[in-house]
Length: 172
Image 1 (spheres, helix red, strand yellow):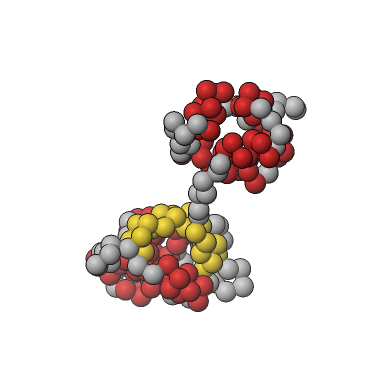
Image 2: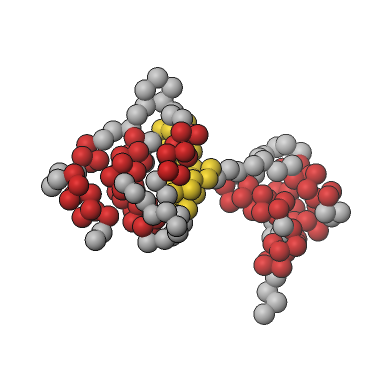
């Protein structure tokens, strides 16, 4: 039985989660990027309530249904919830429903400190990781700030520079 048919069975032909609106009272909540892991030993017990919680957290209805389907299939799902009122309560409730929730965090990386820790010049660092030397110089001198994919790449380099360098080469 699919998630949608289970929800329709429990909620009637007009599933109530479709009428839910995000709870944006007072503070509006915080935007949280989540990695959701299904529990193998404890399957989701109440799909209906989990879907409602997702929608109240600002996740669009279709996305909430997609996330539930991925979790039910045993897959890890990633989602952005723009109206989370109480992150710790959200994590606790999802855990009680058989879903482990982790915040996806992008840390700022001090490029100069990372490069120096690796014992590399700006040119060597840029070459090794496929970056422009001018970009590295701009980051280090504070003229620009790495964002998007560049920030993610720097975070991964900071965590495992040798593995990134290995993956960047064409040694097949």
